[in-house]
Length: 200
Image 1 (cartoon, rainbow, N blue to C red):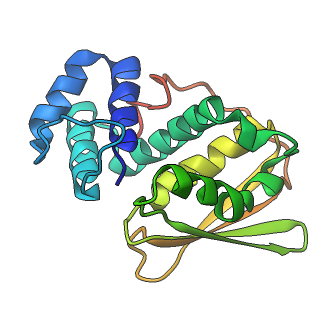
Image 2: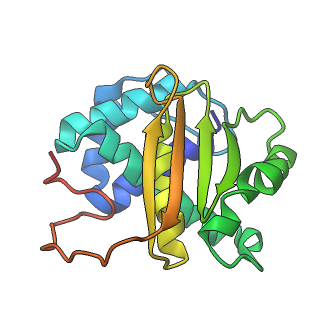
């Protein structure tokens, strides 16, 4: 896994929760890299899992929620760093199919050794069925990316996740459809950055 994923996680935690939490996360995770990551390096994905588990222990936020929040963060960084991928794209249902056919092609030019998940897209009526498959258990990360994409384009879409295969986070389908109901306004929860320390 490319080091930029690790450096972005550390930067997100520092911005949202502070350097002390970063230090405690790195110490508790006790990864082989000892928390020393470079954006261009390559590291075992198991280290990322250990970091998130350690962060969950420090914050009380469930691992799945942390990973989804990180997916949202990564999408925002992606949109900032690579605005060219968004030019001429009108919405979520246009953008998501481009990940496999265009964006990953360009990513492989920058990082030839990158091991990327695969994404397949199929329109069924007005809905897009978006399939995630990977050797790594990061369907929660993919879900965060999809939800952030909907937010980025400021659209009212329903996102349904269906775990596939062994239900271990390596294979999932996301059904993205026009919203069927009016949104329900709920009381605001206290959220630190994209992470909610009050989540159960």
